[in-house]
Image (cartoon, rainbow, N blue to C red; front, side, top):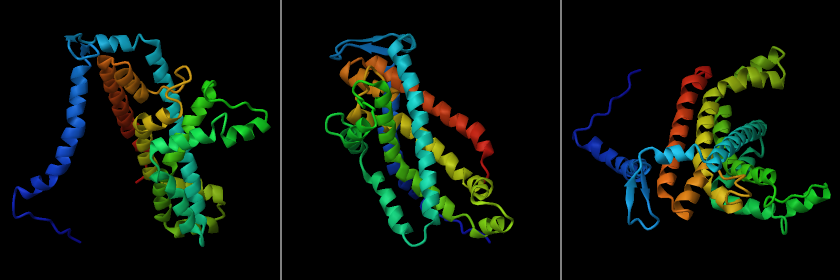
Length: 294
C-alpha cells in the first residue's frame, strides 16, 4: 500500500504553517535560554546599574557552595522518588482499570481529574491535609503515635512534597499506561493462560515487555517533570524548608534570583540544571532505550 504524498502548491505555505510554532520556540525558549547563558558569565548589582564580566566564577562558586551541593542531593532523592512512585502507582491503577468491565469508564474519569488541578493548588491541598494544626492526616498519625510536623522534620517535609508531586502526575501516567494496555491483543494473554501461566507471570513475560515503549517515554517525561514542573508544589507546601531539606534545584534558581537578587548565580544554576536534564535524557536514549522492545 502506497502512502499518498502531500504536495504544497505554494513553496512558502509549509514555512508559514511552521512559523507560529517556531516563533513560540524562539521567543519563549531559545531567547530566554540564550539570555540566561550570557548572564551566567556576568555579575550584576541588585539594581542593575553595574555589570561585570566574571567568566566562570559563578560556576566555580556554585560547586564550592554547600547549599548548592545539598540542593543537588535533595533533587536526586526527590526526582527518583517522584518518578518511581508515580510510574509504579499509575501502572498498578492502569492494570486495575484494564481488568474492570462495568465501571471502567467511571473509574478512569475519577483518576484523570487530578491532572486538571494546577500544581500550586495540588500543593496547597496536600499542605492543608498534612498541616500539623488543622490537617486530618496528622491527627490520624498522632493516634498511631507518630508526631507529624513537616515544618520541623526534614523527612516529613520530603514525604509531603513527594506525595503531592506524585499525586499530580499519576493521572498523566495512568492515561498512557491504560492506552498501552488496551492496545495489547487479548489473544496473547489468553494463549499464555491456556499454557498455564498465572496472572503474575503473564504480566511480567507478556504485558510489561510490550509496555516498554510507553514506560520508557514516561520515564523521560517524569524525570523532566520532577526537575522543572514541581516548582509550584514546593513553593505552596514547604518553600524549600525546613533547613533546605526540600530546596530542589529549580526552586533554588528562583530563591537566589528573585529573592536573593543574585542574578549571575541564578543564571548559572539554570544553565547547570538544563545541562543535567539534557545529559540524563541522552543517557536514557542511549542506554535504556536499547532494552525497549518496539
